[in-house]
Image (cartoon, rainbow, N blue to C red; front, side, top):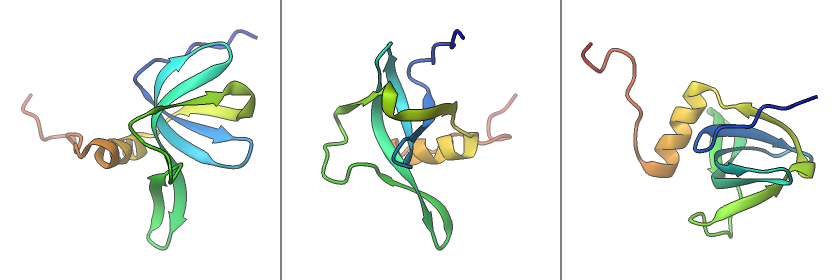
Amino acid sequence: MLQQKLQENQIYSLKLLNGDEIVAKLITDDMMQYVISKPLACVFAPQGLGLTQWMITANMDNNFEIPKNVVLSVAKTRKEISDQYLLTTTGIKPAGPGILAQ
């Protein structure tokens, strides 16, 4: 079965074999690995779903290589989670509907 190549510089959710679910910006997608930027782990908090730094001791300015053989699934991230990811990693709040004049 031929799998469609993922789009670079888009936000994706990755489910890993160890159970981690991470949200990250895809830098490259080759045959053996995904290269991602600023991965955040999905965690459950008393207030609901949250995002936290995936590797606490790692420099988040570096890209991360994730071998494809440890990834169960990859999916386009839901808009509200993607918006929160952008806010968390850049401080930029995406424009909501109705904010821009048409």
